[in-house]
Every structure is written in C-alpha cells, then in structure tokens.
Length: 100
Image 1 (cartoon, rainbow, N blue to C red):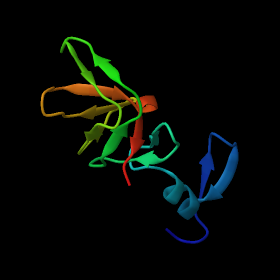
Image 2: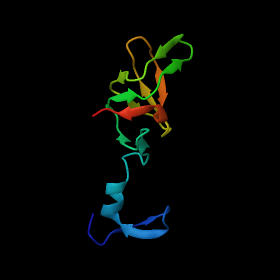
Image 3: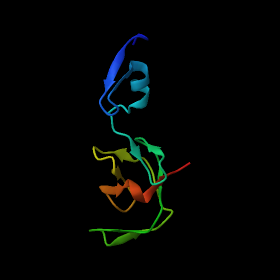
C-alpha cells in the first residue's frame, strides 16, 4: 500500500492510513484476549485460572491445567481446545491466561 492510501475507520469515524489499519487488525478482524488482556492466537498454550466443572464429562479441570494448541472461534469470548481426556472442549477466555 502506498503512503497516501487511507481507509475509513467505522469505529472512530476517521480516515486513517491504510498501513496503520492493517497493523491494528487481526487477519479475520477479531481480536481474542485472555483474562489478563493478552492477545491469543491459534496454536497458543493457555493455563486455567480457576477450577472448571466440565458439563457432560463429569470431570473438573483444576486451576493451573495447561491447555496446548488452542484454536480461535468466531466468538471472541470462546476458544476451541483439546485435553487428553476431553474431546471438543470449548473454554471461555475469561477463565484462561496465556502461557509464557
């Protein structure tokens, strides 16, 4: 993009440089954040910040459990994950923190 390209930002109601808009936006336009405000991406590892009872599995995931290789969903408040004992696990981002 050239330096003189501008895009209308509907959120702020201003014309902003295209390079600035491209840097600020995620590839699909959705920014997913964990409980601490860190940005999450596909493949990240997260840690549970509290004990969670898993509906339908009759199991509780303990605080500090590491969940590896998350996948983002269309909902910025939910992530799709796998656990050794639970398939098709969906967690709310308010209960996880990005791991180091």
